[in-house]
Length: 254
Image (cartoon, rainbow, N blue to C red; front, top):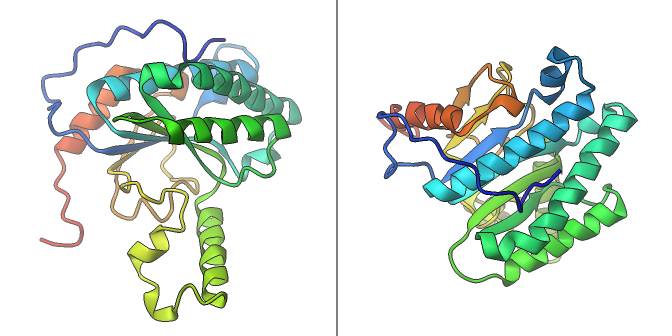
């Protein structure tokens, strides 16, 4: 299964409603529905994850090509360890293959890769690849499309880890209680230095965030679709972007 070095997919023309000059800066996607997609076809759930990985590659390239600077995807949550061992192993294997190709193609294809989540519980080989990918990304110059992969990630876990880090700095005298603001606390999150997501998309018909970007999504717009993730196409993304552009974002104002 190739992820990064496949021929770039043909990109369909956007609908007339979509204004390519008014795209969100940051899109988050909960990649849901792989298992149900496979079940509908009489296939093992692992086949759904393989198909979903290919969809991820397609959407990552499409976001890069139309000029969305940040894409954050929910790949594996802190709760997903409860899934069958074979399914978890398949997901980890797909991520390993993907990251090997990322390391080879990232500079050429104009990407940076960053990880949200606690990487410590991951298999050592996969964890090392994640760290190598981040080191490579940090060394790249120029404007690049950033793909954030949420891996062993949970929004509440992220906030707890950030609070612990801030508490350690407080005890060490590097912070004071008066220093704690929204902006200051955000610097302890996995998303530090990035804009909050403007749009969060959830395929598969579920109407919840499932612990995704709990802090960062405070003023995000949400888009839900019944399309299962392996069937998610650039046209579906265009529909979500068009819906986003029709909304008025007031951030608590009038």
